[in-house]
Image (tube, rainbow, N blue to C red; front, side, top):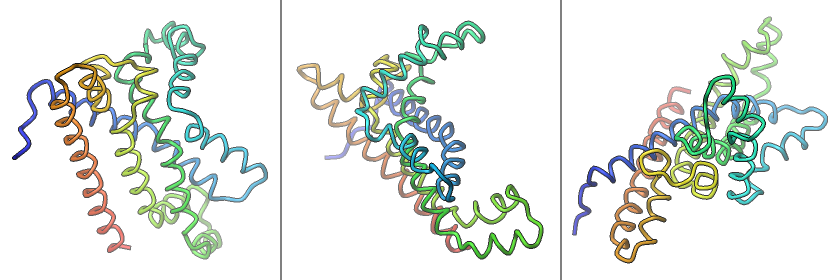
Length: 229
């Protein structure tokens, strides 16, 4: 028995899920690069930064979503400022779903990048320093290329984890079809109806397929990067 092709509604859910995951990774990656590099260095009080970065992993996703709603909702400190200045709302929007996913996968991305940067031979950096390369030059020309596999792992982990994020998304962005209803939320909605088991099963298989596709593509890119290195 073959899996039927998704109908129009299911295609919309799949495309929205991919869009939210891509937005989450793109938004989290610059900060993950910075904090991954920062935590790969040695400085006093590093454990405090490390604890704050990994806090979303220790909190229940619903609590993270509630904190986002408190801070970034229309009545929140940051959300009220966004609304008054830019007339922009994050809560209960696609951007809000991406933000919730980005916050949840951020610690995973930082950890992967940090491990990649810690594996860079310090001798290369010392040699570049003696040749007059500044910190930014060393980061762009040496650290980032040599830690490229770690960055790819971060992207893969962030993307696949965003595909499955549920608690933070439904708390901060709700379950709005066409706007915030990603695959996990659609599966949850299907399971609430008496005859939704078949729909939930199809959506779950689509979710598995997306995750596998993302991992395969990243593995191929990682193999090419390692071959070039």
